Amino acid sequence: MARKKGNQRYLGGLNGKDEKQTLKIDFGFLDKADYKLKLIKDGVNDKSFAVEVIKVKRGDVVNVECLPRGGFVAVLEK
Image (cartoon, rainbow, N blue to C red):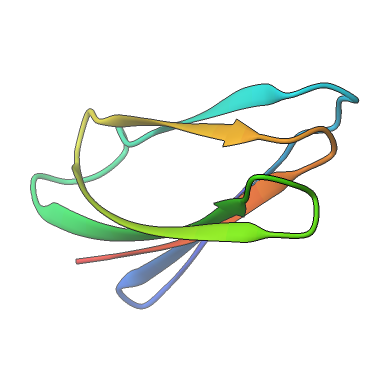
């Protein structure tokens, strides 16, 4: 799921399975610019989370490892 407000985009994904799953974020929709992605995702167990800041551009694909019934949220900005 994604939403846009101003120069920011808000992304979210859920793993609806009872097993680990890799979710992919495909940035093929972006224009030709560099972006900063702040990714908040599952940590090592269901009681923790991890935060990453990644530079992305059009055409990049980010793989997000999700715990069973886990997921991620992210903010994307120029």
